[in-house]
Amino acid sequence: QVQLIESGGGLVQAGGSLRLSCSTSGVIFARYAMGWFRQASGKQRELVATITSNGGTNYGDSVKGRFTISRDNDVGTAYLQMNSLKPEDTTVYYCAARPYYGQTFDNWGQGTQVTVSS
Image (cartoon, rainbow, N blue to C red; front, top):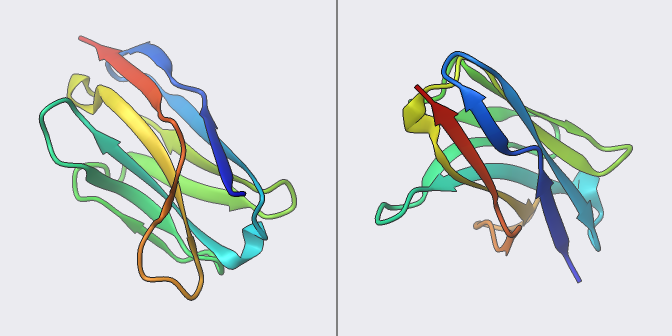
């Protein structure tokens, strides 16, 4: 059974930084692409960043240059380093996993709240 557990969310002032972590179990982590998504109340889910099994990255336009996704295959964890945070980054962030052969992110964590105060 695939389990994804996010941590690291919290309250930070605008311009500050947070690092989110996504620990996994029940997967051969190195064979999965990992992603971070966010969804504000009443809005569509938004891509934040993805990282393939071999380290290729992709970012949503709103976070390019501020956020960095990474992974540590030895400990089965993905990270999202968030710098220069803005109040509009406030929402719930979700970790997701996709097997290397898959087309969609089908495995999701429970989410972690990020709140950026102005």
